[in-house]
Image (cartoon, rainbow, N blue to C red; front, side):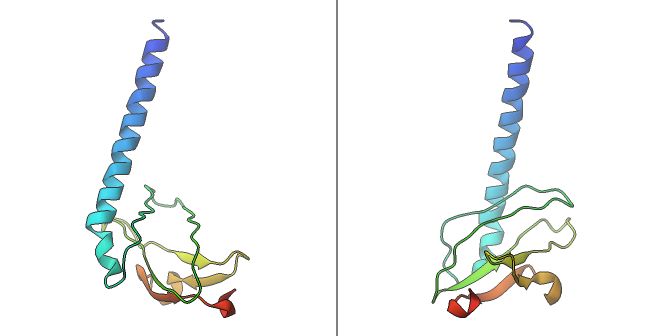
Length: 116
């Protein structure tokens, strides 16, 4: 029992720190990043990830024909530029911000059958 208690305590501490970091990330997204979406209507979903330099994240999102979307990437000013790409289901790169001066948001993504 004495050997199990430190392990359980360590696991609980790790879970608590993870939940706090995730909460801080969502709070940052709501307070800072949401402003990048204006004048678009936010869909209520925050897709936030805590990454360190060099790490990657993938997000899968469905875009509907006839709709316009704005994609915004937001990070701390202390970080280097963030590269993001929009890739279709066939792994074709539709957009890469590296080709546009490492901007942090895409103006309008309009999806139609010609894109698929």
